Length: 79
Image (cartoon, rainbow, N blue to C red):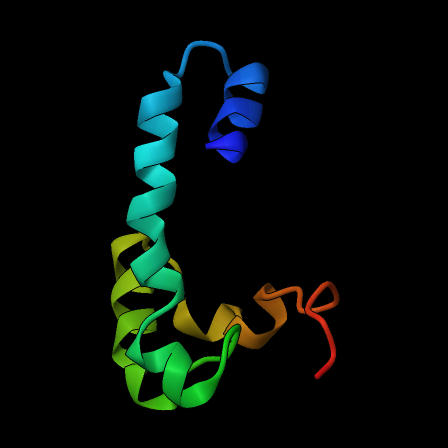
């Protein structure tokens, strides 16, 4: 809830409850069976079709971005 309140302070036109709902809805996209299997902040190679779908939906050439360089892992604690 604190994160939603902080976001609301920057974007007062958004309701705290809506922001909180969005955060809660995002959790399964971050912490799921893929992250359990491959680790957090990694890409599952068999899910290449997902990247292709997003590129097609955005009319973006798939060969123009390497998903590995789109993720900043510098803040992740070293284990």
